[in-house]
Length: 364
Image 1 (tube, rainbow, N blue to C red):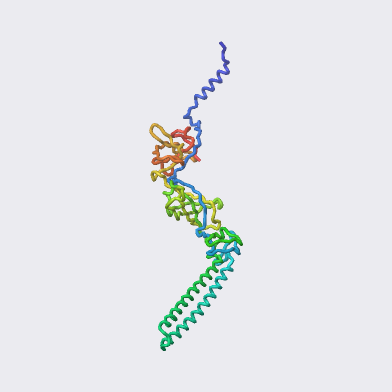
Image 2: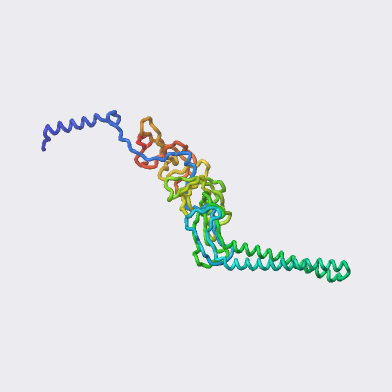
């Protein structure tokens, strides 16, 4: 049998002795603290944020058209141009309407001349009738003729008013301070009455239009507050409130048009910007429901529970506490906790497989 050298034996015994002298309770042996991630329960956890996209538009957006048809002779504006009240936007060829006005004026002059003759004839006939030199039938005819001519004068004067209005309708002017949003007609183009030729935005008040599905429209009503952001306007969050909610779906789709008024005024706002609208909807079950990630919930013989990171007095450290909870509905955003949590709790969401109750951990 081969013997072990005495020197090696002494080294082994010394090593075993030093290892046996160390224990987990030795204060010189420090416990390695594991970092954990957690979710802070706040009052805001009682609501769920839902984002929807929409488009901005001016609250006073108008699509302008001529009241008469004709050929466009002038469009002295450009897209984005600011207009003052009374500024010319577009004009039609007014030659034919000017001729109609002149024709109506001539007809009115003729009608008034006939009126004077009829009145004079009626006065003469009355005098002759008084002297018994004209019959009653002659008097009645003269009076009827005078009344007919007066009616003709009135009709002709109205025709002149219409002709002048039609002539004025060949000029499209701004009624207020506005900006040109789009131009839909070109010079020398024939347009009909009511055909859109210009789109304008007036004032500095804007709104957002969007469509909401039937699953959320029940949570929206006039006055519901929202927050709005625009990719084109960085680092700015606008406040909005619902001003209109449709009572029926749009077309054959199960969506409902909603209009949101933007409270703030900003010179960077304009029509056609893509908007990200955030609604805060309450939890569908209990009023005090809190939603946490599914991975944060554990199940044991005594029921479901979560781990809470409670401060142990040291900076950046906490002790793990087991907390029984009552579960609610499961959704895409997590699982609902109906009872067991309150604002201020730190629910551990990662590293659950390597921690235990009473263990000290690192928290950010």
